[in-house]
Structure formats: C-alpha cells, structure tokens
Image (cartoon, rainbow, N blue to C red; front, side, top):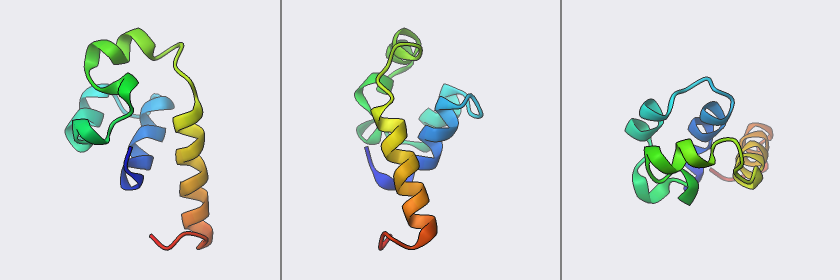
Length: 70
C-alpha cells in the first residue's frame, strides 16, 4: 500500500467512496491484498483487519501535523 493513496482507503472504509471509484484512483499493486479486486472486497469488507485503515489514518494525521516529510 502506497502512502499517497491513504485518503482513498479511509474514504472506502468509511463508505464515502464506492469500490469502483477506489479502483479507478488506486492501482492494483498499491491496494491492500483484501481489496485487490471487487470480489475480495465484497468478501472481506466486514471482517477485514483494520490495521491498514489505522495506519493510513495515523499517516494522514502525521502529515497534517508536519511530522512526515511527504
């Protein structure tokens, strides 16, 4: 998962973006394995580990506060 796509992952997890919009904006190699395609997304969206979303939220907050370079 690439850091510049954190916002899209957060929006997907919070149901502010549907999977198809997410897939258009984030290349397959940059997605978490549970969201590699639509069928894995449907299968895992309720039971997936929240580690990716928590890491993405932390990076977004750290970037906002100026703690990260990018």
